[in-house]
Length: 224
Image 1: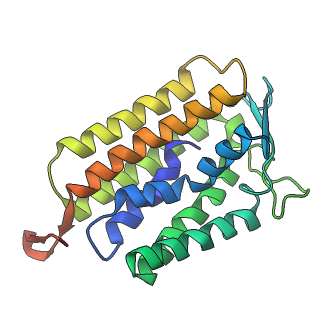
Image 2: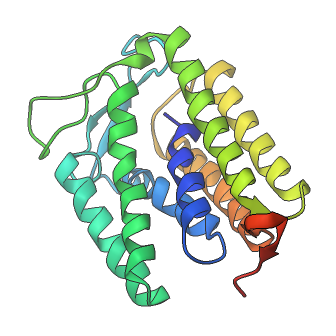
């Protein structure tokens, strides 16, 4: 799962109590992947090139106890709840962001071949849709575009920024699916992933600053 992780971010931003905070929710959606790739660079968690490990992903994420165990994800989510609640002075917004963090593990469970865990030790879990592209690709597009449409229906603002955001997301996803496979799973691969997250998150923050909630009767009120 790549851009599909941002589907809960779109939904959360569309139902949050203030001006849609899409950039913050994008951080929440990929928080554990930000952490994983950072930790992989310094050798705390590990991945390796393994052609044939799944049909769609030639990377074996074989050691992710701190970020992609269910307990680890819960800890990251709880930390993010606290940060958002204190910084924004809004526990409801923090709880909503925490749910977006938790969604990451559940979405990964759908597509990953067994490499997720409950507490960092076996058994390894994963439904394995990466081995079924005819299911995984439509599913990822459906959840992402469906959530994006929900966000647009719930908010108002210029059409340009969200169109650019979803266009970049689809372009990066197409490259992930149909571009050349990585030749290694080292620092360069991790930095590429972090750069992609950063670009999408920056665009999401820009979109969020230019959207406000749609109100009944066609009226809208900015939360500023």
